Length: 589
Image 1 (tube, rainbow, N blue to C red):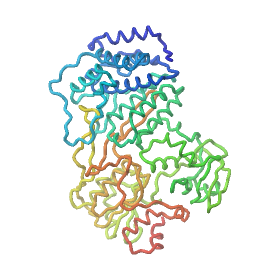
Image 2: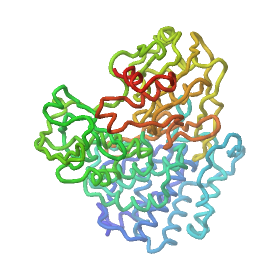
Image 3: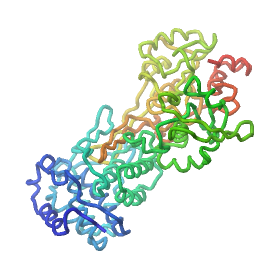
Image 4: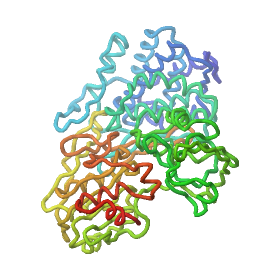
């Protein structure tokens, strides 16, 4: 049932006015069209399967026109508000055929399509990802009239012109002219659907890694149309969009403006660091000096239940709202939130030495409890000599200007461990990587969006390291894990290009490449990975992470004993003849 601020007659008049205006009269609509500034006037209480299907077709057509129709790519329409003008008619359509006919007439109202003189072409050179546009040729689903109009628009699309998208820097998309409608009052089914349609079409046309998402995007659209439209308030809508964003499987793509809506709810926490080891939540340390004393917990303890709910059940319940590229990153983010919750008493069941212990603890404000660790590198100085043979450099506090000094200080060692179980404090890809190679060495290829062909991505020339001094001759061992994300992954790939380098550790976060911000109605904000990053042979990094040569992860026994088993493995790659006790001693902070 549709409840609108205006009656059906008013909607019909509004649609007629819109359909009958010539394109020239709408030239300044982006500045002058204020009709829906105070709400879309569309409020839905339920949706039928027919309505959901017709809205899905509208979503596809609206997005296609947004990035292909010359009147829209020229900015002659307030395209969000045009959506609200056609949406009530689509909702009222009695059949799929009726909805398709309405969409065909809607397209006609935008003005005639001039035959292109110099037509946009999809170049096969370096084509990494083609647009997914087979659907516009499906006359059985769309009807002949609608399909033909879409095909005509595609053939005559304007070259290199977009109103809603520009390319920035090395090529990641910038989504401009996308209002966030800060004054939006919830619920508003029209604006809520607009947010979903905006996000879905951005992924469809401008996400360089959409082919590795792993979800059927059409099914996702159909699933989330009713969920978005029928959300009853700001927070409910935020959680729906959070779940939709999670379907993109991109660690960059969270609902960053509203992480408080993600479970667990509450503003307090226990002063405990947790990490998942073999899918078990293991205490690794404490976020305050008094943490061990006040909680009675020990490194190596397994958090089994929280307030009577098994941790495995919490993971299953929370996972749909955690937007991550892979399980390693998702468990990382769950672990950082596991000790969070409401202030006051909480029951924690702990497994220690095969014995289950129950204890009541008190969550306190973060200002008292401290924040969870986001790195797994060594505490202390950025650079040090672990022994006469092994140098160590962590990137969480690295300084670009000090890179030559680090390398000079490592001269004479058999190997340098570069710890990227963190996020680099400065961009050192070329400053450091160039000191590990003796010839120009390609290490990555970017894919860039094509403004003339939305949905297409072309590979650029390889990015390379060029030799510089002081050159380091020893072995380079790069440490990575689930905290290694984005620039950290890019750095690991670059340093690994040296013939003397290997990567030791476990699966990284799988989100490389510059990010692109997306503003959604209601002042929500998300991002996507906006630049495709691949190895020179074309292998992906998104979702899978960087290539790991020697796979090693912490163990519960190692955590209990205060050992860094990943670092120990790195040392063994450099000085294999050392005994286990010697390796453990060198790896101690």
